[in-house]
Amino acid sequence: MMVTTPTNPSPATHLFHRPRRLRRTAALRRMVRETHLDVNDLIYPLFVMEGEGQRVEIASMPGCYRYTLDLLLKESKQAFDLGINAVALFPAIPEVKKDDVGTESYNPDGLVQQTVKAIKQAVPEIIVVTDVALDPFTTHGHDGLVDEKGTILNDPTVEVLVKMALAQAAAGADFVAPSDMMDGRVGAIRKALDAEGYFDVGILAYSAKYASAYYGPFRDALDSAPRFGDKKTYQMDVANAREAVKEVALDIAEGADMVMVKPALAYLDIISQIRNATNVPVAAYNVSGEYAMIKAAAQMGWIDEKQVVLESLTSMKRAGADLILTYFAKEVALMLA
Ligand code: PBG
Image (cartoon, rainbow, N blue to C red; front, side, top):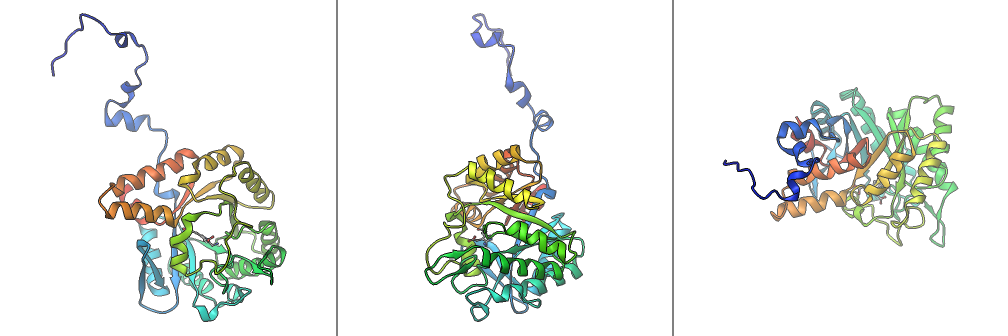
């Protein structure tokens, strides 16, 4: 390349600051990079179903499956071998085991409890996170108990959530993760866990969980969409940010060890504000709809899946997330390896 000395220097030649200097080579860019995505950041959500030897792909989440326990154990082992430290479990409960009050949720031999025990046997070191919410267990698909007028009842629901969290702790869960958005559930669960001696079982609270349209594919996966109404009387209004800071403060005061913002990509401002408002680890949930959008566009050949995934997850870390729950966990672990 020929370099000439300009005879007519442009104003640019007199700049002292040239940010592009730090972008000149790959080594330089690596050296000044502010955010690093790491396999240790990832939590892998997994769907479990009854039966044996089967996995069923979720139509709106290509590459994601509902696994029977035997195959889920293999998937968990593979994930751990790739460096993923934690899985989060979500059960697909057969319609016949659902009722109005989610009784199956605290069955000591229920699907989640069985799965936790089996994972803890097969892959003892992997951190198992269990979801505390009634929606996969209720005929109406709501996260709580419903009265005759269709109102979601808070305090009676918390009583059931406590039983559910205790059943999960008894099975060996490392973290229980209330995703129901009832008021006061974190404190009630912490108190009950301590009373039963489960001091080391942690709480990862879905603190700022929004009433989002991005959960559609997840509800397909578990057939858990609400049969009437919506979740707007308990999940947060998508327009609110200050309220998220309040929810996080309440959950920490009640004993949450880690807090979560959900969804992630459309809520990076919330992640950032919560990062600044607290010192506990902040998790971001890269939810089913975010996964589905990337997969769909990639299948059409419209975006570069790998690059878009890395860019999306890096943006969550840049916003302030310490941990990311993502269905891309295995793919990302392979990309980072
Ligand atoms: C259950 C729960 C939901 C998700 C996680 N836990 C669905 C909902 O609240 O309706 C969504 C996760 C995703 O979309 O990936 N309360």
